[in-house]
Image 1 (tube, one colour):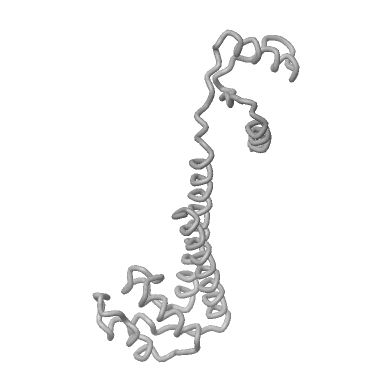
Image 2 (image 1 turned 30 degrees about the vertical axis):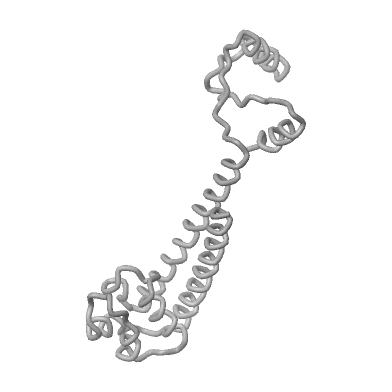
Length: 178
């Protein structure tokens, strides 16, 4: 990654640089120094034997940067979904067996209710969205667990961090759209 700032400075000053994959260049025979490598690269370039790697234009690079940032944020958010599932498992709450996506409307509302202090499974099961296939009784049964304070704390933090990453993903989406 060290070459990126240098490349940017060269482009700003109107110097056309070429990024070359080092695996495609034969090494200088004998002792190796940076000076000899530079001279060898200059000689290969003079003969037209070097082909530059693809480097997209500025707008595409900027877009690619936003997309990579978004992908990284999605990965981080997924870790917090796993943390929520872990906390639920430790409480013996099997919500993810009856709801395929605990980050959907129903799953989020149920997790918020648990974090908010609601412990009655029948009451929490009423938060189900009409699109959920499982009935209220099945959901209530999956919500019978051991409400340990440390696991609820874990669940609350994972939910908060998941939401934070969702906000950051939305910011990236706005930049990508712009």
